Image (cartoon, rainbow, N blue to C red; front, top):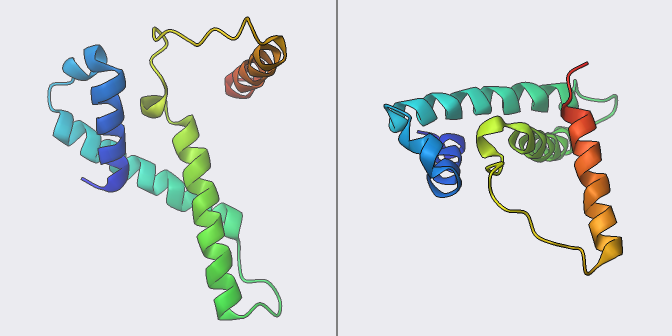
Length: 118
């Protein structure tokens, strides 16, 4: 199992124990999930990176590749359904801090708009 699969397994075991307990073969399931995540990260990294730029040295391209990988991992992991918080978990109450509460509400609305299929 790669690190993405282990990450998803650990997250689900800790934060979604009921769903985790319903998986007949967790090791196999999360090993496959890890491979799927790795493929998605790799594909997105390649899209972000693109071909070497004119005049770019191999070292510059390598550094840009690392940056593209970090970005691709962040985006892929943030959107993966098995790495999301359990919807039934209680959310924090920010009612005593209205500015912060409004900020989190704005973020939630943006996140929902991004994740709503067209």
